[in-house]
Image (cartoon, rainbow, N blue to C red):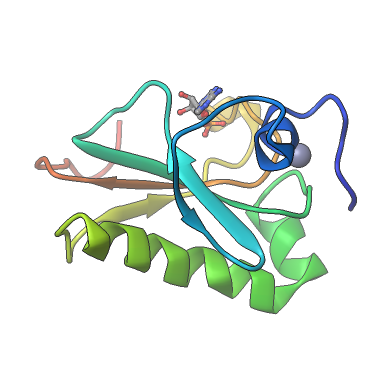
Length: 115
Ligand code: AMP
Ligand code: ZN
């Protein structure tokens, strides 16, 4: 899907809203979460607008794979081999921005199962 003019992350991708970008990939962009939940909290988003991880994977599998490799790249760049990669899917589990994003969290102990 092409950019959605009402989508917050499409606006960040377009440069219309500022963000602290940590990785600029061919198909993906990574930037710091504005409300970090761990010492490292980065969001990896596909440049192409889609509502959630499954929709992105269906639209372009290689692009979806780049989200996973970008998560590893940004975690390693900050010294973390271990990190959590989370895709909230649906408002019922806390998704608030309906442009696919992987949360990359690292730097503190993390409970399992998640709360
Ligand atoms: P989710 O709740 O899984 O949809 O995650 C959305 C995330 O986007 C939240 O962790 C927010 O803190 C984050 N967020 C919202 N607005 C911005 C922004 N302008 N820049 C960076 N992160 C943002
Ligand atoms: Zn979007």
